[in-house]
Amino acid sequence: EEKMEADARSIYVGNVDYGATAEELEAHFHGCGSVNRVTILCDKYSGHPKGFAYIEFSDKESVRTSMALDESLFRGRQIKVIPKRTNRPGISTTDRGFPRSRYRGRGGGYSASRARFYSGYSRARGRAYR
Image 1 (cartoon, rainbow, N blue to C red):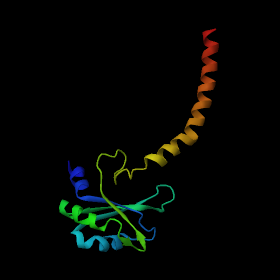
Image 2 (image 1 turned 90 degrees about the vertical axis):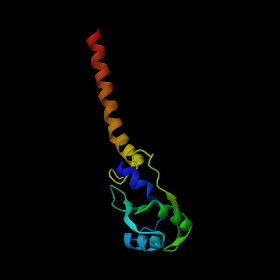
Image 3 (image 1 turned 135 degrees about the vertical axis):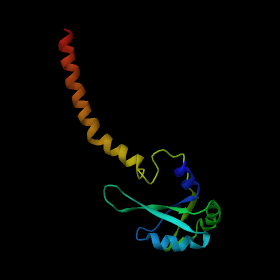
Image 4 (image 1 turned 90 degrees about the horizontal axis):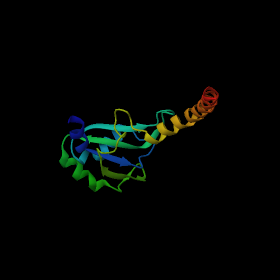
């Protein structure tokens, strides 16, 4: 699978400065190998950066090399570098993976309206049975 293959050549970079650009990240990891793509994750609702990024290299060897930059300083912050995990459902660059915020958003108004719906529904059903 192409996506799994790309993930195997990718790393997760945590604690990234909010003002960081893809170009700066690429420059920081340039010594590890050829960078195919830099994805800085942003919040779906506010558009603000979430403070982490994914970097896809052109070969798997670069992932191993990039581990040397774990806890290195980038824009004055100590970054976390780990290989990207493929088996995290909902975390991908396509759906931009926000399992927590998506759940919270859905749980907010949705459960309240569903509760109202059910209370009205059970009353109606109760009358129907009598």
